[in-house]
Amino acid sequence: MGLLRDLRVLLRLPDFRRLLGVRLLSQLSDGVFQIALAAYVVFSPEKQATPGAVASAMAVLLLPYSLLGPFTGVLLDRWRRRQVLLYCNLLRAVLSCGTAGLILLHVPDWLFYLSALSVTAVNRFVLAGLSAALPRVVDRGALVTANALTPTTGTLAATVGGGAAFVVHLFAAEGDAADAATVLLGALLYLCAGLAALTLGRDLLGPDPERVRPRVLSAVAGTAQGLRKGLGHLRRRPPAARAMAAMTAMRFCFGALTVTLLMLCRYSWSDASDTDAGLGLLGLAVGLSAAGFFAAALVTPWATGRLGTSGWITVCCAASAVLLPPLALSFTLAPMMLAAVLFGFTTQGAKIATDTVIQEQVDDAYRGRVFSVYDVVFNVAFVGAAAAAALMLPADGRSSVLVVSLALIYAATAIGMVRVRDVSRGTPRASTPAG
Image (cartoon, rainbow, N blue to C red; front, side):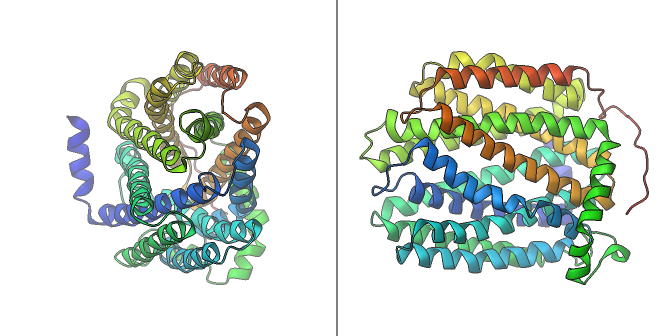
């Protein structure tokens, strides 16, 4: 297969392999940490989670650090990205240890959320930095394949990390000790990710040495101006802006479906008192969704070669609109698990194409800022979806109105993408001076 040949070529590039290794370890740690949070917040025997409680937890963990997004982008375009990957992962290891301690001390929920927020806030620098650095280690012609491989294998790594967290819960005594042990496992993996960043050259991942600004205060002071220039650059790249908008809409839908699935696992498909059974069903759904991500990585390079990036995003949106009602309106286990596979496929397929459009269209001097904005709108969309789901979902997670509304959003997004001119077939990029 052409994809497998391309993957072999990419994996022969030592710098690409090293950057991929940092991503895999980082997202492996994320998977462990996220399942630990889900177990503590949603599946704890002492807690009776509601859609509103889940939405509140997502808002606490996602919205505040969205404020870091503009600073993230400007700093990624001013700091050595290798150093960002190193120090942020080491910091997350330390903060995760603190979070584990708070779990054991039975602190109030707000203090736990604040600690967990500190871990996930640093994650913004890591993920945006990994995406901004990718074009520095592969040629432009290989970006679609690289984008198919790196985020998807990162998601698979997060799934493996989630599986490791399930194993810890399986063998550890039920309760806070198991949650704390899981968080400590994540801390160890964050440490390994930080050390793996040392295998990359100090200046390899950019930005160019003449653009590095070692003074933090001066970089932060220029954030507003830098963000304005980054957004202006994005406005001059309509294909990138429209692809980002479409992906944000899909992220909103995926977030609402995630809350629905959480509540179904917790209350509809298992005894509400048997939290291990509910957590196991969630693990199955996560694993099936990861299988969809992997399939998208295999298919997307082939599909974009024939349909173009915008065409493939359109197909993913349209397929989601058509498939969602028949699979989700029954709210039964088997169809919803099939939906986890298929929507994992369509969401990841669209994301690979979107990442490629942004990387091809946005100049390196602005790429960190644009990817950080991309990351912020992703999180805001996910939190907005959780809030909408909280308003519409009953405790058991069954809402036909929500499912139909999401199908209409998918359909509207597909229609909006139909008129977008593709950029993967040689659309020239206008060059703008860096600022």
